[in-house]
Image (cartoon, rainbow, N blue to C red; front, side, top):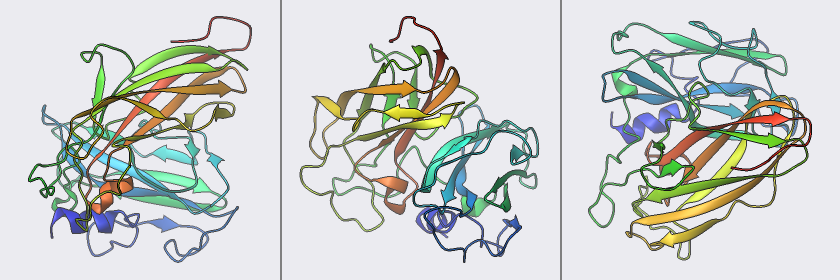
Length: 309
């Protein structure tokens, strides 16, 4: 089984792979047969696969499937949103609509064996789902370098995300975001927009399950900024547009800058999720590569104060 096939299987939320090592326990009916709704549907974890770090530790790449087309849900850490090893493994507490690929990683030590498992339990709208994660060979993926050549014979790599110049600033490479290790910390004030500067670098290449070229005129990288955790509502003003600093055409190294205007409705600590998509699109075009994620922590005050980077 090649990585492309593996990702296609795991991209189906990894809930029907009883023939492998995964299973799901649910209350309220079969998971995969549950239809989408505007409101009131379930949210289930998704196992995209796993990959190694340079130090020998391992990352489980995890997403989710919110079957609601209009309802975003908040599920606090606790009995309804927990891992069995420890309740907080960096997972989201705010769930956007529809399928969200490779949203965060859970890192386990190099001593984690092939037979060990960890599991994420989610309860939403009366449905409880538990999905285990294991270092099964068939779910070993390559999200930091495409497994197949692009049309120019290169191997696509994911965008790099940072929050400051110069390029040597702390950077996330690939889908390695986790709520346990925000890449940056900011301060904001309720009702006042935070101008969050984001810098993105990419190789300008792409990966695709079909081999089809990106549509002409597409920006090499697109950026989504959304709520990941927090006590109140998060509003991102308008579309987050990236200004090209270098490159812009297929195969050209690319650099860009975006400024997201973000407002918060209540004081407290928030986590924002940044999702950078290259030419390959969501889910890497079915290949398991190449996109980037990062988490920004924002401490929001309820009284007047300085807001900005």
